[in-house]
Image (cartoon, rainbow over all chains, first blue to last red; front, side):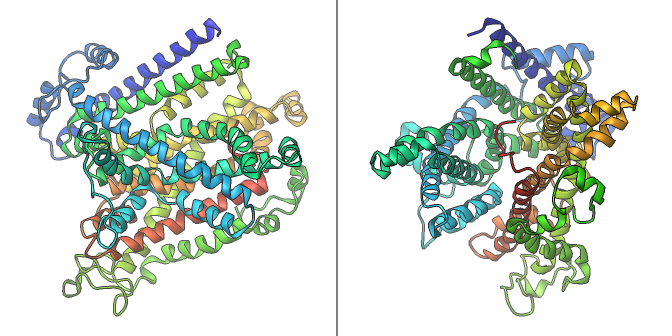
Length: 318
Length: 294
């Protein structure tokens, strides 16, 4: 592991956080009247603008506000909610945990569903099964999560197929099964696009793998078909899939907003939407920054892990 | 694409077979166009083909089911759903193509410059793009629309900004691979200006990957745009808009599912057709590119 690379990569991650925080600060407080616009809407009077500026500390010198804001981001201080007066960081913590649970289940669900389907489609290439799976994945790729979520709600939460609750969240300590029962449908709805994407990725890398010389050799040696598929194929198909999942973390953070809104799931996404509805500026700022920082962190970790796995990158060339 | 036929000398330099026929020979493009063209035509004709005014409230006929006088039924205010789906299409297509156009206009020059200049400028531009991309797309769109009044132009602006870095990245990597070619060297030796080299020599030779990336973005832009209006940050009522129609449908989900079905179906078909065309274009214009790597 190259020390220089580690330092450089850490610096890049830190700088990214500073810039994103500055940009959010700039957009929400520096643009003429923006803070007051967000908080008050378009029907603001001079007096109310004055009041809001005071409440938000916008009457202080800009440099003080800026340092205060960006510094706050690094220690997890996002100020207080304008509605409840509660520190935003306190409001976020539980929601972040719930959203992470939802995203993890969503990831796992999409992997468990997509990879086997991708392998089957590749193994039965150009048969009806393959065509069905492939065109199904096309639909999956083209359906925004708010549509798939609403359709799933319609189909699976009312008679005759009353299989899932319509929303909400049950903490893990009240039992794994009710917890999972509430998470499964939103998790599935959230990831139709990623599921389809992983499926296609798995299928195409499996098709390449199955045509390779060593698979032919394995078959000639008389290795059982199932073992050929899953042992050799999986190992090769999995890597690009993991990359796809890592790359799509940001996409998931967006889709979580929609899904939580639809399933009344008390997580980060619902937090942002309520913030926007209530014009609660500190909540909106934190709601955008926290997932973004999580995304930057995830990329940072992924890069470091790659470096550990692949010594060629560690020379600091990239 | 179809109106922009390269002249024969140019296509010789590309070494591509007559472009239009090879594009139409691709099954995905053909199927995609077969779905998309009618959608575009109907959306453009709009009021001319819509049976009713999409905002007119036929109070006596609220919640009318599909079939009969109103082909697709009416909504909770008695507005004709077919007319609303038709005019909502205009919004969604404007979002998709407008935002992609803006993303191209912003991203292509950045990518060309970065790939051609290399060195520090390249590093600076691409790091900036990376940072923009580190904000999850929907959240960046939300941020922009929280500050700006949410009308269609600002939604187009928000999505254009969100997708520009992706276009820039693709353009840059294509530019890198041609910037050492002889004809670029020759232009440099002739003393041509940088902008001449970028737009006259390099750009025509990197259109393949850019067109592919742009076509893929159209579908995503429509998805993000409708998602934003679903969250109430779109062009807003009373203008018909698929995202907002679906949001409204949620309140009547179990009583009148057809509120949901029509705009969803229209949205699905539109995005699917642009995805098909994007994939087809990739097959024809950029066969080596598999979508990962680079």
